[in-house]
Image 1 (cartoon, helix red, strand yellow):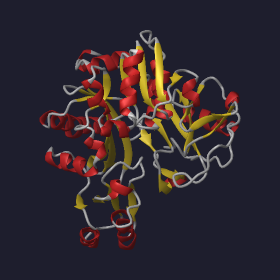
Image 2 (cartoon, rainbow, N blue to C red):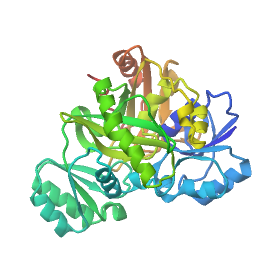
Image 3 (cartoon, rainbow, N blue to C red):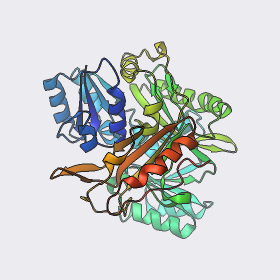
Length: 417
């Protein structure tokens, strides 16, 4: 098979690393890819949002199956366009992708199908937001309605902060169209867990659990990011919690997708907060998580292509999906200034010094005159495996300082119980 993976980050590197283990895969192309991906697949100089070009390329090369990494092309309708051209692709249609593309759509979906989530209100103007904020308890969460590359949620500790953030989004338009409408949401206390699921419209099968660390610095301090690290399995996701999540969240989500007549054949990511009242949904993502994919791929024992084939054919119920009992930990090396402004182009040194039992997935890298340089906020993800999470964690932190570039930083508390 000839496979196309759309995207160019650590998630896509991890997906391709796993796909390469399948005996049915002949060639893998990645658009646009990165330096690390280029070592195990063929990079294609097409933006992940240039849907017309991707369709054209797939038809010319004879791509057998396309897997979409990032959310934006899904929300723009890449799945609809590919299928209109007779091309097989994994992912939700534009209609279904609104579960991530619009926070308001997702909250209304959860309300309609009685899926546990935080209480919320919707504001389209600053005046509306002011009234809601005046009646809120603190802290409160303000979310931009549209896509914001994982940076559209803001935890406000008091009324003044909340009013300032509402003004920044609704009047100053700091996130453009994404923040034209906002959700003002109850702050949930508990422990986060990420549950990614395979879904074909008839069946939903959860993957192993993981926990993402969104804040930039140790002890959950600093700004929200796209994710600074993760580990799997999640300590708090016990069998009892998993049972509650399947009954109260995953099955009702599938029921809602069916009743809304969504064509959803792909991955659905359910971000949960495990509260004293049980699991509640923080958000839906309509694709593989990043960096969750970096810790899940090494634990997956079943051929990923076989899973994708069953999803595309709506026969997911016919496959047993096996996972290793190992613990995995991923720590992200990021550029100074991330998630705000940061410089690019710094040489990355020490990659050749990393032991073979560790994985290094490239998130934001490029090549410059034969050297590997930084090209993003999140630059690399180092992944360790072990009999326990503690063992995996120790491997990563023992070796991570062997890699260096100007301004590099990382969290030191990933995977601590």
